[in-house]
Length: 137
Image (cartoon, rainbow, N blue to C red; front, side, top):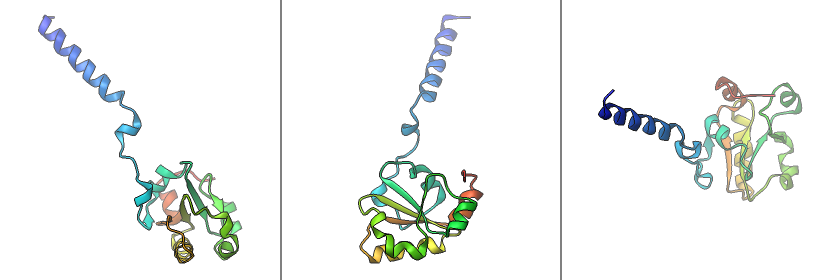
């Protein structure tokens, strides 16, 4: 092997090592929570749901929640939202979910009417979540 080939192989190896060693945070664009749209997809929810300043609330009924739910979500059935406003933070990003996105959209609209500014509806609900192969409990 010539010295030139050895230098070339070394440079390629270093380049490959640098590319694969890049931290995940630098490989993906960070999500700006302050500028999320009103409706967000399940991939966005999956990316943000475990952040300290994000709360995901399931607005389905207890029986539906017991059957399957997104790990780590809080259950506040739609009919109880008006009575449980003190449990829904105003200083964090709130994502609402249900079976298909209809009830969670209703809850999001209600909360916005009550002055919440960082409330988002997860499009497609748990149906879409499962279709994307995200985990459920």
